[in-house]
Image 1 (tube, rainbow, N blue to C red):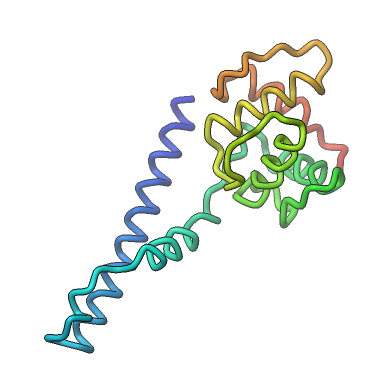
Image 2 (cartoon, rainbow, N blue to C red; image 1 turned 60 degrees about the vertical axis):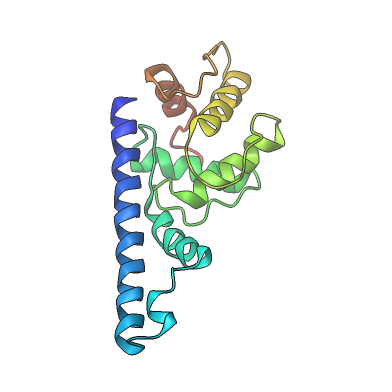
Length: 162
């Protein structure tokens, strides 16, 4: 969990720097082109910030301990069960996790926004799903991707699904 937290904090910092850098560059350009006008000092809009953040978001990959082969298998399984994970590339990014969130939601295991972010609610959905679909499994649905959750996910994502 400590490694996951460090990764998420690092990713959040990188996204913030990237978005802040883009916003600053946009204001500097506007200031140069329209020196002395109101546009030079106008704050960036929420839409501009959202576009910058969306451009950074696809870089997030959270495989929860799966290697590339097992992550591809998970993506194939999502696709084969009617949930489009995007490219079958072994990198569980935003599109793969949106597909998983939709699948978990269909079972009543997820009731948050479908955003592709692997937060506690997504982990809880995964834990509930694994508990129901893996014989003898009884994970605590606590939203923490600890060793037992990662092992169960590893076992479930066997490599014969593509």
